Image 1: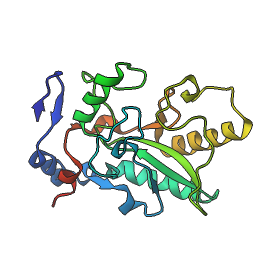
Image 2: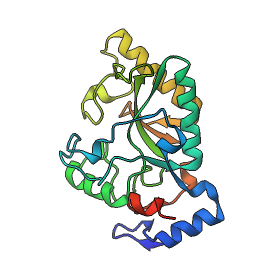
Image 3: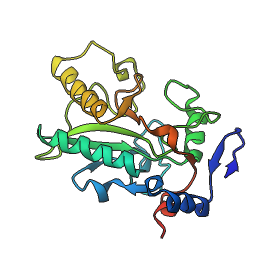
Image 4: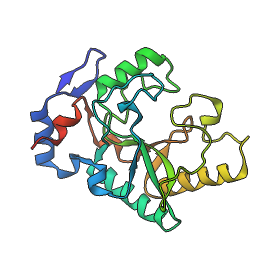
Length: 210
């Protein structure tokens, strides 16, 4: 385990990550499209369409630790009973990307500082919206992903009733399956088991290498 320049212990070694997985399979980062085939991906950080204005991921993929991915699969199943599904904007995020984001945003309300790290770096956070299962159409929610305005708050009330209802469905369903919303961003959820997992700074290709 390497000490980052910000005083945190961050796993940067593929070998160490693999050792963790061998000791406890729940430590594995699993690809969401493999566990939840019906999930919709809109990985904004693989495109310039994000708060940074540039792509920071080489490809549009989403990973979570195995128990967290299993919980998200339960969310998806529950939403499908309503004719809805999840759209994932971001999931596991390498620590180095978190550092890069904070350098540009410089606001702890919207970007985890490098000296703390993000629960995204642990593979335990996910940014999600809603779609209609029948056609993948986006369900109206308060803002676009990463729109850093007051309306992004989960408690913001100056919204049409149907938008507030959609947000309530998302918040309640995620909460039921163990996800805790960050109140500054209606789309951001941390799984309650996040303290069990280390910060990682491994590229997507590394965590899928066998």
